[in-house]
Image: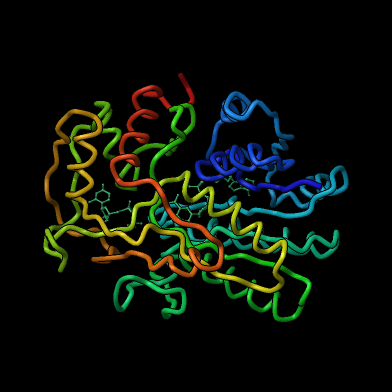
Length: 337
Ligand code: NAD
Ligand code: UDP
């Protein structure tokens, strides 16, 4: 019986696939490669000494997607596939609602048809909107400020309703904080298309000389140095959270929701400092005005995941920066080297 990983060629998916393979799981990847490279598959094989079955299929192509279920015995699904750029979602909301919502509905309907009950969903701390305080607990009020976040919240609500109606379903919603870092080998990592929107990939591109200077979006927030504070979590820790969540839902029915963060908040300037130390270079930056929609502070209380999953983030900020830098330095053109 296999675990189907949608979006398994992507950033978080590829790291999770390696951990699943290393723990003895049979893995099948489905990915349309709209935001990833086919070369990831060779690297997954190189790092795990196993070759997972791969389907280059867009989930929205329901007929082709269903073929996977006819050809394989699937026991659980980890659903990473989706569009994830906040700014782009404001410009192209329809594309985001279509890809994120419809693909999830297709999967849930197929799960019902093939009697698959285990489902792990990639949600995001963005569903907390502008939180009333930090650290953030799972029962904080939910709201969103952009179409990407709304797709995540809508899917969470769908999952709650579906689990209420069908007691056989076992679902884990994982709310990620800010994933950074890369596999310690430097062979897989994050490779955003075009100019990165997120802080860490932007810093790594400045360090490698592909971008000139980091713009820091505001230094007048009510934080320890005025710049925005976030909970950065190593992608390997995040990946491990999926294995723990899978263990949990295999033995526990119903819906569970967990924050996956370190519980520590670092500012943009803290990140610049830590990354400079890791790469041995100064990261030039300038302060510019706030980015629309940004919040001052966001970090997790992950004690629920610690208690109920036995999961805890173990990599610190220095290690996150070292691994991000190794990946960028060894692969200045991403997977196109
Ligand atoms: P990613 O873009 O690297 O991976 C997503 C993968 O899904 C890509 O390989 C893409 O080609 C594939 N894909 C997209 N639409 C598809 C479709 N219709 N059919 C088949 N494949 C499709 O993103 P990631 O950073 O690995 O994020 C994984 C998940 O985690 C996403 O759902 C994202 O919203 C969520 N998430 C990410 C972050 C983050 O900062 N990276 C934070 C919170 C939540
Ligand atoms: N940020 C920044 N410059 C950039 C990208 C991000 O100053 O080029 C800041 C942003 O304002 C926020 C933090 O870095 O305070 C993290 O931003 P990111 O987009 O990585 O994550 P998110 O805002 O989605 O949590």
